[in-house]
Each structure stands twice: as structure tokens, then as C-alpha cells.
Length: 318
Ligand SMILES: CC(C)(COP(=O)(O)OP(=O)(O)OC[C@H]1O[C@@H](n2cnc3c(N)ncnc32)[C@H](O)[C@@H]1OP(=O)(O)O)[C@@H](O)C(=O)NCCC(=O)NCCS
Image (cartoon, rainbow, N blue to C red; front, side, top):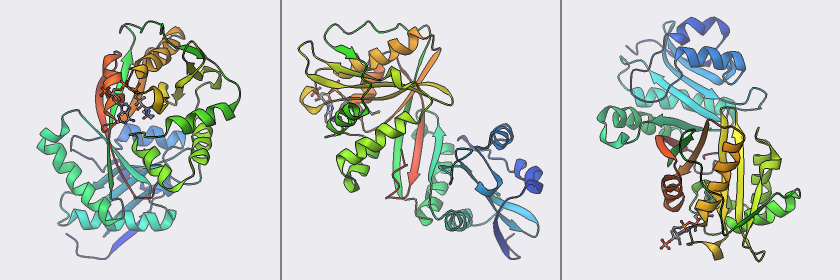
């Protein structure tokens, strides 16, 4: 099949029909025709963020990145497909990614959604295996598994905490200080990785700015205190383009191990539920076991898994 020269390029409008014909038949998330069309319309996908390998006028591989419509560069690889007739799809996919990374000057993380229990499904593990090998050859070597949780209306709303007092706080600097305290000893991969190269206060300030830039209302953010005024943690209900999300919560190290994660998550859930949320979504790293357990105790259901493959120094890999 790989007879002629292979051309690697970003796509143009005239490629659309052929792009829509690239069909992934493996049980993982992919840029299916509906998603491709609607994200091209919203600008989350763009032709300069889709790359193809072409041979004799045929598309034999396709990679699709996602980004903010007005963002400077793509944020995540969403889909990687190689025609089944290609003998070495790992090498071809890796070459395609290398060309695109060169064009972007960056190697965005690859995010794939799979069903729970994916390790027991040979079709899913095979689909992940060749993509992960291709990603690794193109510099994406850092693997992370995140559990996706959802709370849906009808699930009991947690009672208000009877041991913590929650307060809104207008001063971002107070949140910066609280963020840098709860980051100590975190099990969250993104924060641990960021703290390896960034000063804790600068990192906390960056995180506060990132949460401010989300569609959720800044006025929803809460600090949690003991009745005698000792800071226990932060609770940041938020939202993304898909709707309400848990956002962020954390307990300062000296108050860990008392189940306060449940009180903070309960407050976030109650605040969203009171505003009429039908569904609240959250992700946490599979290795962040105390957080995953808190979700499970608080009426959240683990509905899927997000696998992330990133370049080791990529701070956006979570
Ligand atoms: C995740 C987090 C909120 C859990 O808070 P918590 O109120 O201490 O949780 P729990 O009391 O339910 O803890 C359950 C157990 O995990 C342990 N634990 C909690 N956090 C831990 C940590 N960061 N590292 C190691 N063990 C931890 C507790 O000591 C307790 O152990 P025990 O059962 O032996 O007593 C807290 O670790 C934290 O703030 N982490 C940093 C921020 C973060 O990861 N947020 C979630 C991002 S999605």
C-alpha cells in the first residue's frame, strides 16, 4: 500500500468529505462525523489543527486536535486514525504527529475516553496500544489515567456540613494562599508535576487565574473553616462549556484524614443543585484514591475513564 511518496500536511476546506470518511471502528472516543462538523462550526476544530498523511491522493492517516476557538494553539489531540491497510500504522501515525508538532512548535497531550473496565476489553487495549506506541515515538511518553464522575438530579443532595463554616471571599490573594497550602502533599499528577518546576505561590496564582477564566461564576467559590476560624480547605464549584463541574477542592495537610473532602464536595454539590443543575461532572486521577473515594461516598457515579498521554514537561496534561 505504501508505494508512492507520503505527504504530511494540515488540511483545507476542500478535504472535508474525505476527512468525514476516516472512520474509527474501535471502542474509544474519536472525532466522528457529527463531532467533526459541529466542532468545525464552533471553531474548536480548525483546518490548521487537523493533519493528514496522503498517498496517491488518498488520506491514509488523520489526526485531529481540539482548541479554544480564539486560542493561539491547539490544547489536545482528540483523534488519531490510520487506514487499516497501512502495514506499520505506529510508524505512520508517529510521523504524522511529528510533522504536526513541528508545525505547532508544541506537542499537545492526547486525550482518549474509554469505558470503565477498559483493561479487560482486548479491543480497547489494542486500540490504545498502537496509539500509545505512536504517541511515545512522537514524544508523548507520560501516561495518566483519570476517572470521570457524574452526579445527576435524583441522587440525594448531601446535607449541609455541621462541622465546617463556608465563606465566600472576594480577594483572589486569599485563594492563592489557600491553593498553595492545599497543594502540599497532593496526589494530583498535574499539580505535582507543575510544582516540580514552578514556585508554589506562582503555581497557585496560575491555578486561580485558570479557574477564573472558566465559565463558572467567581462568586460561587468558598473557603471552609472550623467553627473557631481555622482554614480547612477550598471548594470551587465551576462550569465548563458542557455545564456544571466540581471544579476544585482541597484540604490543607494538617486537617487531612478527617473526611473533610466529603464536606467540601457536599457543599459544591449542594450549591450546584440549589441552582438547578441536572448533572455535575468531575475528573480525578485514578491514583488520587482519597478523592475518588470521596466521590463514591457522595453520590457520584464513575461513568468513564479519560486516558491522557503527554510530553513529560507538558503542564496541560491534566
Ligand atoms: C484529596 C483530598 C481533598 C482528601 O482530603 P481528606 O479530607 O484528607 O480525605 P479523607 O479524610 O477522606 O482521607 C482518606 C484517607 O486518605 C488519606 N489522605 C488524604 N489525602 C492524602 C494525601 N494527599 N496523601 C496521602 N494520603 C492522603 C487520609 O489521611 C486518610 O487516611 P486514613 O484512612 O488512613 O485515615 C486531599 O488529599 C487534598 O486536598 N489533596 C490536594 C488537592 C486535591 O488533590 N484535590 C482533588 C483534585 S481533583
